[in-house]
Length: 157
Image (cartoon, rainbow, N blue to C red):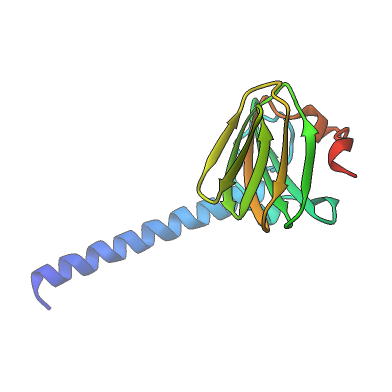
């Protein structure tokens, strides 16, 4: 084996060993972190598979990850799901991963497709409809108290 090939093999071996160390550290961290302690300022590292999937009604499910001052929600909407007109004190960023949502907001109809983001200021009334099966990531600042304490009856109809 040439010197260049030996160097490459040694570098590859080192990278693989380092990746295994990182992977085992991540696995250990994953097993020790409490992913659902609302308002907890501790480090969290988790998979969506480890986060409770809450069914709001047959067309709407969500998962919540709450940090100290921010909330990330993964919202799963079946085609035809309507999120009724509502507003909240929280600033909201909605990023569509799959599908499309039609929003009625600020006197406009806006269709947000996969790969697109909508920012919604605090206290701005809005409504949405899933035009197809949709996976939406919503970021809220501050975290939605009504979602955490389950007083969000407008979503549970």
